[in-house]
Image (cartoon, rainbow, N blue to C red; front, side, top):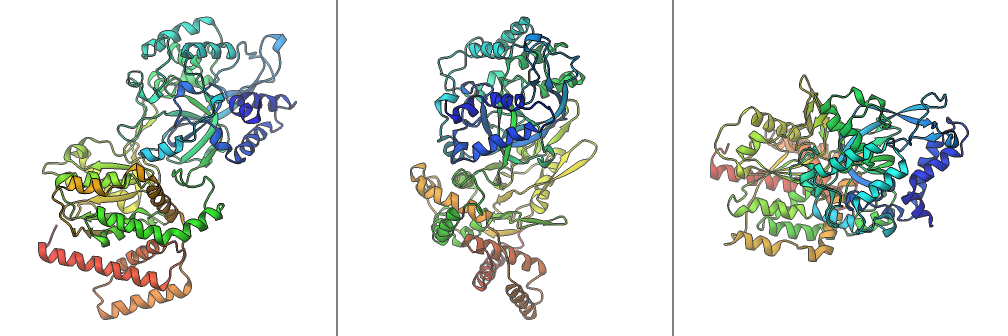
Amino acid sequence: VDTSDMYINGPLQVNTDHAASQSNPKSGWEAKVVEFFKDRLKEKDAHTWVPSLNDVPLHYLKPNSLVKFRCLIQDMFDPEFFMGAYETVDPSTNVLRCGRYKDVTECGVDFNSRNTVTAERQTFYCVPIPGENPWVKEISSSSRVVPSTSYAPTRQKRSYEEDDMDDMDTQPQKQREPHSGHTEQHGNGDCKRQETEAPSSQTASASHLDLNFPLPGEKGPSCLVKVYEDWDSFKLNDTLEVFGILSVSPALSALADEKDASSSILDPTESMETAEEQRVHSPPASLVPRLHMLYARPLPHNNPLLPSATLEDNSAFLSSTLSEMASVRAELLTYLTHVLLGDALAAEYLILHLISNVYARRDVLPLGKFAMNLSGCPAAALYTQRFYQIIQQLVPSSFYLGMSLQNMNQMRLVPKKDYVANRLVSGALQLARNTFLFLDETHLEQGQLDTTGVRNVTALGNLISWQKVDYDFNYHQMEFPCNINVLIASEGRSLLPSDCQIHLQSQVSPPNMEEYLSNIQLHPQTSSQLNKFRIYLSVARQLDYSISDEMTKSVEDDFVDMRKDDPQSVSAEDLHRMLVVARLLSLSLGQTSLTRDSWLRAKHIDMLRRSRMEQHQCVNGNEP
């Protein structure tokens, strides 16, 4: 058996071997287990051997095998206790057993043993990254799992559950009977799901169970991730790639169903939960698998075309990308100019918007954000929807929100704490960092916003201005910082704030807008061109940037000169915006420090944009 097969198929055995080799329970063997897996996964392309919950249907994955999961921490539950070490009653097998990375103990625990060690772990409720676009999923899943880690499609689901029950030898036989009934109740019956069917498509099974995805219509597995160390280093809404041991023990479903007081579940506090809390915190493992974390890699982005190492650690990739950035930018500018009906200035600003990023915070002020209002969008012919679909092909995660009266009055944008079920009910603004949020105001119509509608519009305004969302905890609100690129498409000036408004000046008037955009849009067949754009946008967003003392002095002198000519024409706010534009302009060309040319170019395009806005106001009067 090769080593990859061993540690992917039998990670619990690796854990048991490390534990058994230590005579003293406090010898620190747990850290050695984690180091063992980290070292293996650092080997060349080793992480690609590990099957992913995002790509492989749950019924194809072997229980207790090593898997990975690309996810967002949607909620954090209370810590739970488990048996870190215990002995069994049977004297013939009376060795110290390890309870780490398991949900269920072997039968016959000796509760009177002095060697029993109670330990603590944290549970995170994790969901796939909200709004992750199809191209990301396709590229990520193209490195398929090696056959040894999968079940043969012909095997029946029941058979592996029986195997698993035999392996774990959990408590009484009678626990199997409620489980088979429980399975039927969820629409699986005794036979396995169809080969092609992923767990997320079990609509009948999941109908009674709200998987709490932030965005409507999302698919994919949610997961209870058990964390054994350093859980304070994780925050709500962090995006991670978790490597851990998959647990789908049917005993979990049977016990949740039966609420058996004499259960062998490792969490003795479970009986203190209310029925509603029990339902949310202990859902059937066939729908919400458990993943026992060995280690997790923070994801600064979820673009699978970039190397998994940071840009600084991958100098060869970075230097080759930087050398091509100016030429790729020119190609992208041409493409977006066509999409924006021949408006090159709007296309230039759109590129700057797409690479913007909150890089720091000063007190409450988020630095680097660049929310954009593209006014003058044609309302007819579904232009905005097609425009969004084109952007969707370029960015890893995005969400389209049509700002109709119905959506504003009915959607839950802000997450809210449910104290009965003791969970955070997600909202559409619970998004991962660097998600592209497209607000379509061309859907606005006359009517009255109700209380929910006013609250939603306020939440969008706060998100744009302060890059924060105030989660609703009933008796108080709690601020959660975010880093979301917001583009507002509107006919007139938006009712929401923005950092930059540019009015679309179309140079072409196609008789058939749908046909025009279809002909322009790059299709998946041209994936090499699309991939260049995708890499370009992700790399530009991650580059470091600095301004030399010399350039700072030059900018200050320029500002003084501009104020001399006309004190009313340039405010401190204008200077701040021009500095943001100059920063983004430099990064869009692959330059990590401000040059005199980039500063002059930033001033020039800002002047063009403002003169266009003044012209538009003269023609249309004092537009609201």
